[in-house]
Image 1: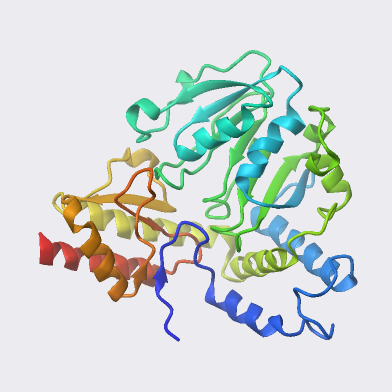
Image 2: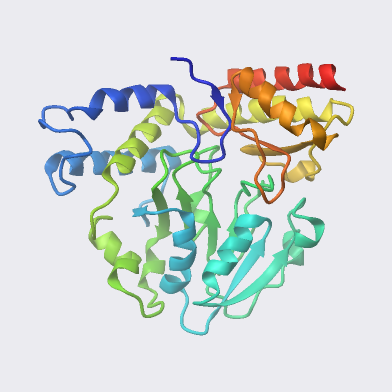
Length: 361
């Protein structure tokens, strides 16, 4: 078996030790006499798996005790609809800072349930920057302020946590969670789809300050109520047990590797390697994001001649580098270099890019 360097934005590459551990547990979970995907979520074996996953995540992210942790089905887009239902009163406005495709998606998902106010947007600049905090126009009596911490498609990332005063800050951390130390206490709610840094697709994490759960929100079915989900320990209905188990393995792997402080160092080195390959190419490659907000996780770039896009992808695949095609919204190329992508893989990509430019420049 020969595994390629996988630069997919999500579902993304997973740590090989995690995959091998999951492979060994697939046929039988410990002495349960059945696979981990066959045992009941109500049984003691899986309850232990779930508890271990939460403990590991709390340790990895230094989550304070006054924050609840939920493991929810689906992805971040589902949470974008549930957040206004749970935390905004009928007719109450909520602020949205739009810095890319997923910020626009969050705004769209919230639209039917809350009076959305675009507090700031960088769309006029083609999402190459993040609007300065002093330019934001927040609504009076806002339920919360929503940001997308890292834009997976457009490749911009908040490098500082904006101060929103007494109004809770809500952030989509799907593509940058656990990539560096983070002060959770500066947020009211964080949420993330797992399929980039935390595990496989199909499960998300919601971290919410407990006092916010006291808000009445809006009429909603029990299954959409975060309070009910918390009371049921994220098992109000049958959860995606395999995904939850894989998330726990991935989080434990990160702890074993040195935690978020270690991954922050690795991610800084990986991003520097890749941006250098772009910036030092004499215009053969281009990334026009403001360097102050360039993403460390998702690096979009363009070749000087679009006619070279197909040869680039074909030759990259032959070199063992896959999933580099850019999102349809932007085109070009994109390399996603999450925690599980080793520095060796990014070095291989940077070396290939230089060699390709030399051959085709």
